[in-house]
Image (tube, rainbow, N blue to C red; front, side, top):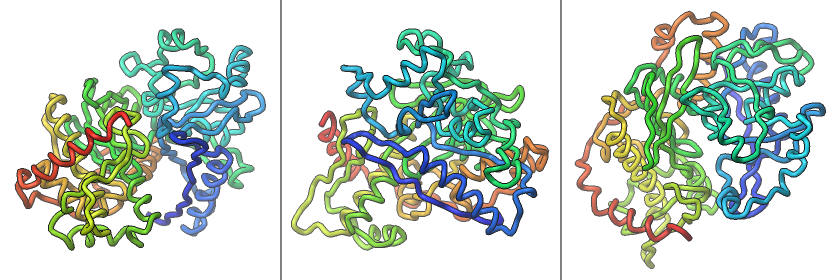
Length: 437
């Protein structure tokens, strides 16, 4: 890796439960980080063989096909307004989009589609199978947009982008943007990209990402698995004739909860949290239920602390937050073991929270499995680079990619999971009390 550059895109919260992104801010940050990263690497844009784009999924926008002007902000995957729309559909937000759709002037897309459209000055209107499969409108079994659902919701099929392979030549970024045309050789959803970056290429390979949200993914090969208890099928990637499916379970408030704790001064630096948690024997009965956006399939679950006492300290609160992540990991892992009828292989973890040794060790203890942590926690970016490299011929096969894997740490079970039983039972009770708030 030659260089890294980051720029945070702030979420907007116009109303309680609403989460949006400003499309122009996202676009300017996107262009800016590419320019800064290339400059920091001492390279020129003309030297770039291909661009791989990994984006958060299920965050959508609609815009005018002719002018390119958005009808509204991005609606984030963490947004909860759909819970109310189920009972009372409010069309006012999308009225302009509805009128444009009737005239075949409306485009619908997730972040990747929007970026492709902007990069190519409107000449490419497309997405890939990994992003499409996460919208809820794309049918992973038939690999096409769902006409029955669209008809039921009165959504014209014309608004949806064409769906391309994940590792594919999507065209080139307009030379006015970066000073030279850069081939766009891969577009992929973030969790599927992290799966590819971890080299989870075989059925039974497991990836755990802990970032803003938490995601367990299992490579199920050519088979689709779903469960009413929290797992859903996705297309991992499509490269030529190869179509790889995943099953996924998610928890939405990992990084969000930790950032909130930092914002209210429970700690100064996130690196302190593992030490704070270990400085005490237990959380003293304090439980934290993560639910700032959505969790355990209940959009009305509220985030809460329970079991507070006069003796409760910041360390107890921080430990309770970290324990909640490990407990939720245990819940999802147990569902996967029960529902996915494939022998599970080594678990590979990534994402910013994977740098927290307390969470990693406790998760390993609870599930009684070894967990590998790579040297580079940002597997989503690496996966996009791998996919772009394959499309551009920089690498010829996946075996070359496997040789590039670097493991920084391995966490193996050190305590019997039964030792955590009383604390987890208390946490489960706290979770039930936070439902349907």
